[in-house]
Length: 298
Image (tube, rainbow, N blue to C red; front, side, top):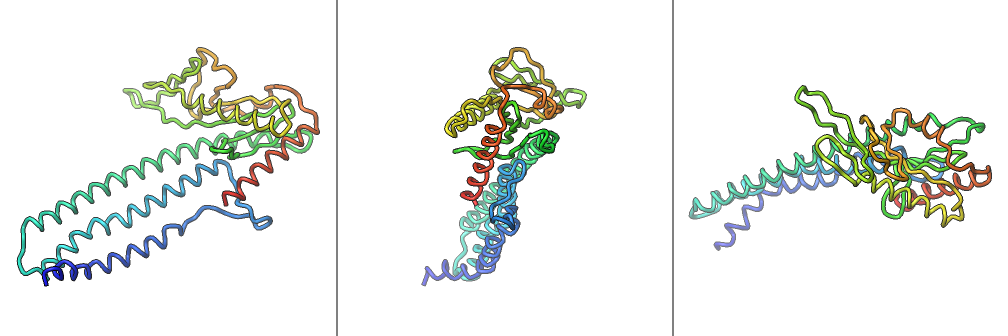
């Protein structure tokens, strides 16, 4: 029967299929999520959302790197099986197997390049957020200086990088990671100009970072109002690590800084003093928000 010539070569794909099942079973082997031994909640570190995205990016790279060659070789292996069982050989059919293998190899190359570029961007963002988080940790003191820093605070649809509670207001800190271009001498061009609602980088302009910081600040202000804490002053801060910030036109309610002296800036920027009771309620509300969202997400 002719149809057996096309069914029997599938036997040669069994080893590839078994290998693919092993790869799929191991794709979550390195899950970076850790749970607390005290309450069972997922532990949230600085830049936790970026850590999660980086874990998923590594998992995607693992799948593409392991499953890609298996899928790419499948038409070639099937064609070799066809050569054993076919009564007549068609060069057009063998050319089709070769073409399909070549196309799959090209797709695999593009996916691997995409995965590597994505990991590089996420690692840059993670490095910037960790640097800013370390700078903010300088605010934490004994009870005489009640500063609290919350990292990776979840909202309804996104995560705020850092929220700092001070005796004189709340600071919403967003970190934007951008790679400086190089000049003709190979030196990085790190000058960025704030022009109202836009950021002028060397070679491009954008509004997204300021808009995102403004959205995060607005959400935090509205959320505190819903928690009956509407009298708390909220200040948005956009941090551009590694950039020399020049203010041409102030961006309104958002402060744009390079992050080098962020702790000192937050410490010396007085918004509106809070009494001890309000301060404690803000800290408790943010703590419950972080833990509650972590429990749901975990």
